Length: 131
Image 1: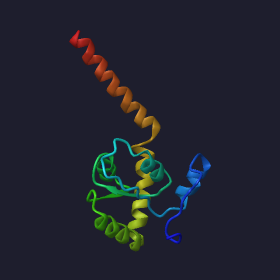
Image 2: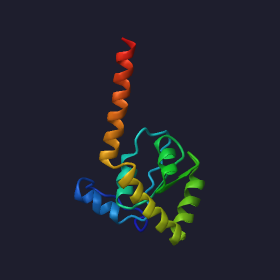
Image 3: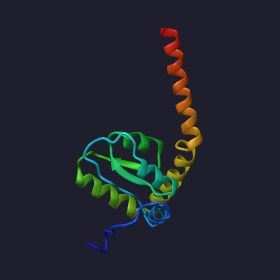
């Protein structure tokens, strides 16, 4: 198992970036939907695509590109998707490019902050109209 699985005792700062840069893909199977997959976005920023369950935030992330979604709670489908992506170098290269591009454009901090500010303004505007 140690040939295929690596446990990282340090996952902060530079160690996290070094770890992510060594990956071909990242997959952290989740049984329940997640609201925000920060680890997937961090990996995408390093050009590492994700393979995650088709639920919660991962469904949205997969639609943007840079990763793929498998049938939730289906380890056979996960294994097939990992095999398919890792054995197709052209597809893997495309996912890597798309992961980085998606992280830099859609999940860029300035873009995300502008979206949040716009939503706050909408809520504030609705609140003033309701009063």
